[in-house]
Length: 182
Image (cartoon, rainbow, N blue to C red; front, side, top):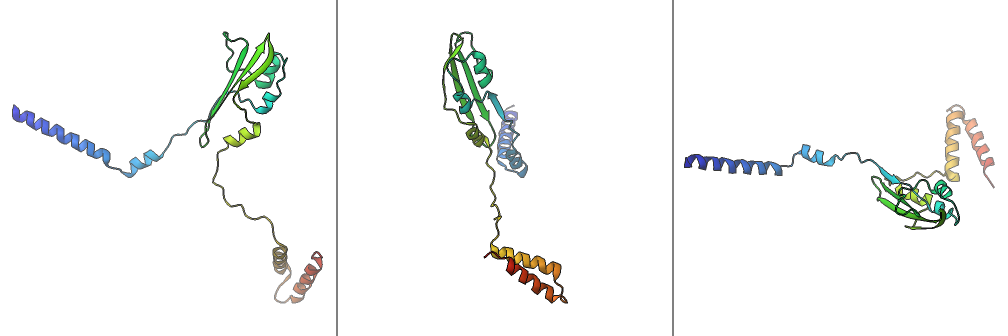
């Protein structure tokens, strides 16, 4: 009986050693699986409120006028009937997550004030959510007068010049020189 127990213990410890050894092997398939990442959905929650929208609010506006400018509030609590809360979050792959909060206060159903995070303008917000791309060097799109003259000569030589028509090339060069700005 003890021999059987010893054999089983030896077998169990050998199996444990073999299984832990397998986890340290780094095969190409395991590396490839670790590099593949699932698609992350862009998550946008709430209402984006820009600096321009907040600046359009004027004291004395009705709730409907405020709703027309800012949109429907994310939170309109029964316990805080004099306050609307606008919250906004966006998580986009390749950019920093953004989160903004704005509270709009009313007194007797008339807009009084707002408070919350510093709001970006619409253009600032658009710049922050753009995913940076690898910028390639943009080729120079201007030609110097010398380069223009050379390319014009090359074009004229292709169209007008054949080995037997040397006079046409001379005439084209003469025309080019006359067309140069003074």
